[in-house]
Amino acid sequence: MPKVAQRSADFEVWQGDSLIGTLWDVRGDHPWSVGRFVPGRGWAAVSPLFAAQEEWRQQSFSEGMVWAVVGVRRLGVELRPVRGGESIRPGKIFLAKDRASFRD
Image (cartoon, rainbow, N blue to C red; front, top):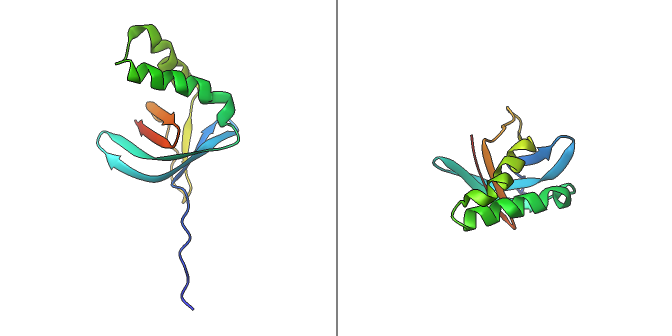
């Protein structure tokens, strides 16, 4: 019987020792990398900040909400490759519903 390849996430998204979620189907869309986001056990604690950042983006990057971007950056989110390799500290990362985008 042929073996069926099991799919796995591309990255785990960590904030300190808290797993925020996983990124699947990540592909390059220069200069961004985009993929599908699946929330993890630590998502509830940080989701309001990511929601505010998404609102900032939808409001055409209004200066009044730049605090949300700074707040997300200060989280120190780390992307850990599931299949091994160097972790990534993205310069910008957007996580919303089932979408993700990040860049160095």
